Length: 307
Image (tube, rainbow, N blue to C red):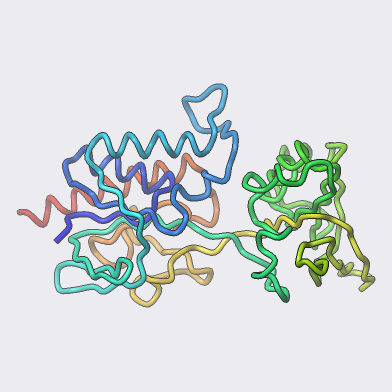
């Protein structure tokens, strides 16, 4: 029987791991399918307090990981596939093995959404990606496009200007949803060319299966055209990673976990933090703060069980 299992290792999970480990709860931390979460796909993080010159996302995650290990957190590269409440504890299916635990902190984050077009899964890694930081350097001095209009899309487009010859920013509306400062930075950049009121209707690969362009449609006029690019970066939002918990834990219409009081879900002893609960802020610092809160609430819950 574990005292505490933390699902996920982004900012929320690692902060929870630091706090619960320091409280001698000996947490088992599950790395999941994307260890480190979305920060591992980010380069410079400029808005995390305490780093006036910024810090690389992967380095920040690595620092947190080492800090949690230093205090006794145990890490396991594994995914959760099932979840069952029992009388006074819970069971998790961890890669086919059921493990019992007194409490859980779910920090499984959110995953990128895709367009759902034909051959999409085959084209991933062949000129189709959701991570500019991971793949931008492969597309030096060639045109690329970013699909989306929020902060994520704008950040991707700005990052890609370091490598690409041109960055087309495709958005289905006639203005960006991104924050004013980010939108202004993108729209004044000489390499970024917005294409308004447009959607991608088809990926256009060559005979080898590498993307050479996209077919786009203007949503107002219906006009179809071709845009020649060598890579497509999809940045249209995220889906919370709540699949193993959906039938047992309350979620909103978009699948995000609903918190009842503080960081507690609808089940006593099951807490959640970070992007898996947060469709609004989605910041490293808010995730870390929520991870801290979840750890402190879980510690109180476990102390109550002992008395």
